[in-house]
Image (cartoon, rainbow over all chains, first blue to last red; front, side):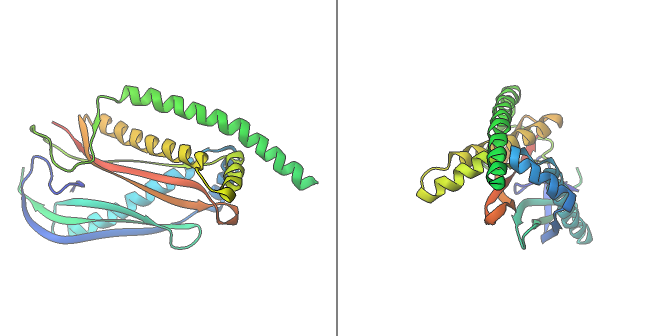
Length: 106
Length: 146
């Protein structure tokens, strides 16, 4: 499954568009991580635990989007966009969406 | 009295460690930007002329927090309004760091440039009194490999 955030996949030809696909995940912060982050709020600097948490969450959102695209019979997703929103205190929603397409065999 | 001592200690700790951390971070950003300057970054979506074989999605993110001292200063500053330099430098560090991580990923895959770069900012954790203490910056784009 090829993914890009422009309208095409470089070096390949798009045969058919199958419509929009999306994937999302809502993640809450871990208590232990929260305590560590509290210390970091005193000293400043990167909150590595949160960076990892959000990376994992985005990967999962992309996986769900890809699963939906596979279900439609696509072999690539183009024009992918990411979006983040905080639904409640302490939780974030990560959302990925794009257009599922069928590519010519290359 | 005890509370005052705690606040004073936290402020002093934040001042000392926060400043050191920020200086170290900026030094590291400048060094890595110099190393990665061959990878060009564009925010336009057109493919530049050339024969591009692959275009994987590359991304980078970072969550970064203010120290206690800067947060206190910002709280006081926001009473009178004006520039909050503490937050300006926080966001600058976060954006440059996220872009660098994206470029590192592009370089690892043998790309020459990254096009259609998008930057997204989110505040994920809130400090005391609903004050934003840390921000996340996420950068993503399409890496071009010839």
